[in-house]
Length: 406
Image (cartoon, rainbow, N blue to C red; front, side, top):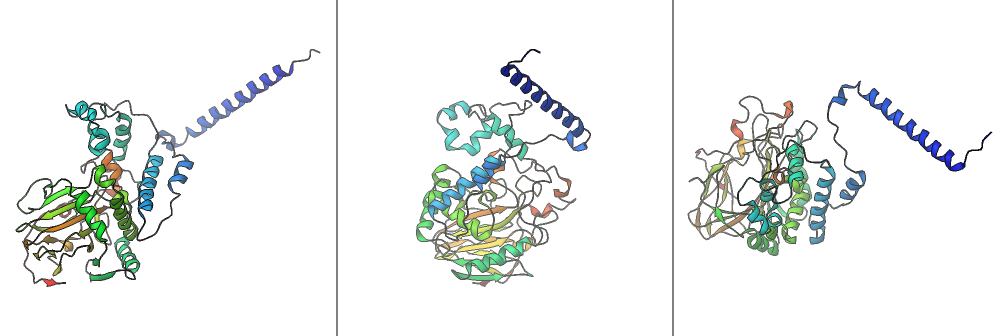
């Protein structure tokens, strides 16, 4: 008998082992093909280690430190990156710049300075084609994407909010069920935080819009905190983190901070804040978290026209109210129109304030992906009923009520 060299035996053994593995994979593939679910595209799962790293932050402080706020934002970004499927760009995606000036803007480093606009609109110039292709999948959410709040979640949010803040702040509940919640918190902002919002947030004021355009019903000026100079500021991050902690709504579900300026004679007539389509990528606006950045000599109050309530501006004060019904937080049928309100005309002085609108679904990821309000969800049960979303758009009407000042 001829003795085989050990190296030959090892090579042969390895060959047979690999062959067996291949055979098992083929058999497994044949077996799985009989399942109807195999006809669906399989999305790769996020790496477990990446998810664990992203979730390694544990902070429930009402006043997180600057470093904690920065870690919150970093953790959010890490989790977002971990959960976005790591696949190559779809071959059907035509990667072209949407503006003639994209190359010029990119040369001026606008891709880094203004990524929210540049990456989806100038993907070729910003080398963000794969990012945009992935993002397009985020614009049409499926039934697997769960809403932040289920029915009953609005009341639970405010009950938690009141219980959490009452021991530490001068808090007043101006309205509660069966009417909508309206809660005022004095000195929610520290003085240096007020100054940061005015300085960083008020970097570029333009005429405020009502809906999608300039309107006589809204005459204030607006500056969005959507540039690194503002949203990257540690104090601004600290404020956003605190709002997320006390409301239970993640930072990613909030729009950029909107800083407002009202001069004498300026106002915003009666309107409703829920103007996002229920089937949009971010869903409806659940809550408004409103911050007063100045005292006003006369006028400028926030008046809830159907609740007979007016809140007087006070520097550092926060005002928190819902835009959706407790039994229908996704606003599939209608919003809570009882929270119609107006910003009353400034009679003397100047009014400075800031809005933070909080959504049912992730707003920041969808916005960065270039999604639009008209991008429809793919799930039948998350679409509004017929004639159900007529009342969810911003509009103005006229009512006359006696105002109770608080």
